[in-house]
Length: 163
Ligand code: INI
Image (cartoon, rainbow, N blue to C red; front, side):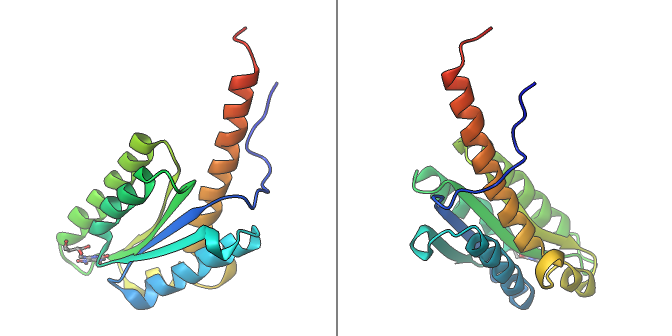
C-alpha cells in the first residue's frame, strides 16, 4: 500500500495570494492568516505575490491570469461574501467558487478556496480570527499540502511502470 499526503515540508514553493477588497476589514485578517502559514513553511518573501481585486467575483479571473503564467505552484484565493439578505450573494459566491474550481482544473495547479460565505458579519469574523480559527491560514495550508502531494504523486507515476 502506498500512501501520499501525510507530510509537509518544502520551502521551494512559489505562491500567489489573491484577496478581494470587498469586506476589507475581514479579508485583511484572512491575508494575515495565509501569510502566517506561508511563513511557517519557510517560503521566502520573494516567492510570494499578493494581488488585491475589487470583489470575490473578480477572484477567478485573477487566479486564471496568475495560474496560466506558469510562475506559481499554487494560488490562494481569499474573500468574504456576506449574505445580508440579498440574492446577489448567491451569484457572487456561486460564480466565485465555480470559477476558482475551474481554474484549478484548467491550469493543473491547486487553487484553494479561502472565501468565507456567511449569513452575517459576526460569522465571518469568527472565521477570520488568529491561528486555528482563520480560514485564510487553512486555505494556505491546503494549497501547500496539495502542491507537495501532487509533486510526490507525479514523481511516483513517472518512476513506476504500469503494473
Ligand atoms: N463581493 C464580495 O467580495 N463580497 C460580497 O459580500 C459582495 N456582495 O455582497 O455584493 C461582493 N460583491 C461585489 C462583487 O464581488 C463584484 O466585485 C461586483 O459585482 C463587480 O463585478
